[in-house]
Length: 331
Image 1 (spheres, rainbow, N blue to C red):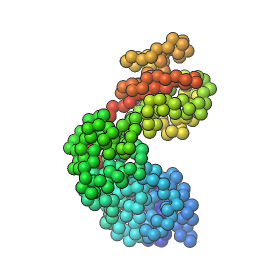
Image 2 (cartoon, one colour):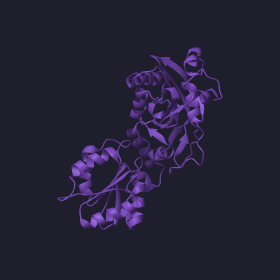
Image 3 (tube, helix red, strand yellow):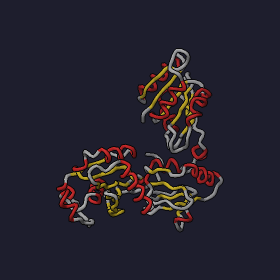
Image 4 (cartoon, rainbow, N blue to C red):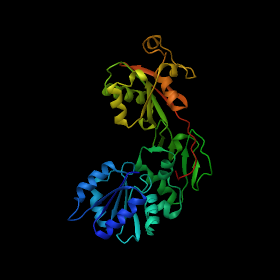
């Protein structure tokens, strides 16, 4: 977690430095003789995972207000008073980890963590915290309150998952009879009105002609997802043959999505076990009969889910890593 601390008095700065020694991050001094607060907040909102204000809560609220977007995008924001008596998560308590961070910082300085999220206060299942623990993307963060609200009202919520979920099902949660009856669902291909939680387990195998641009790859990927119903959020990495490691378009495409990409030599791809879509032409050029499927399977360590599609000089396939969800809400 990338943390950024800001304090406004000498006493507050000393506390910020003490906290940063335990939970590393940059430390800044705000106020008349320090960095402009608006500039610091804008910069840290864009580049940090957590912002920690040591000072009055009102200062933090006013500073972050112009930058708040949604539960899935906002960084954690925690406020501590300069005396180190209270640690208050203000923003992104679950998905951003502000609640856990407040507890950790409180333990460092002997403060009281002030947790106000309703599911925590009432000891109920928190679907967004569960999604984070299972490494899932939350597609519709605005629907979280519908699930949490039902639990807080004493109602039963129903889930759907094509994977078995290990452990004891939380109180108030039952499996739906069908996907369309679910209030929240684990899925790679979201549809309907449920809250969709997408496991980040997909590896995109890529083949392309030399000189293929990032825009061409983006268009091919959009068509691939549209045709299969795949959520782009399911993809966490990419793979290809080592002949493509110097392709600037492929590098840019993966960078935009934040995917690491792994390249394999032809002999390693030929050795990948399984049934793949062969191409004599691809074999004559690369030394292996299929690049996208074989590289996806090898990089994932799992199984091929979506076989090769081709168009515009681009071939794509998707393999998925092994996934075994459970009911834990802690990582």
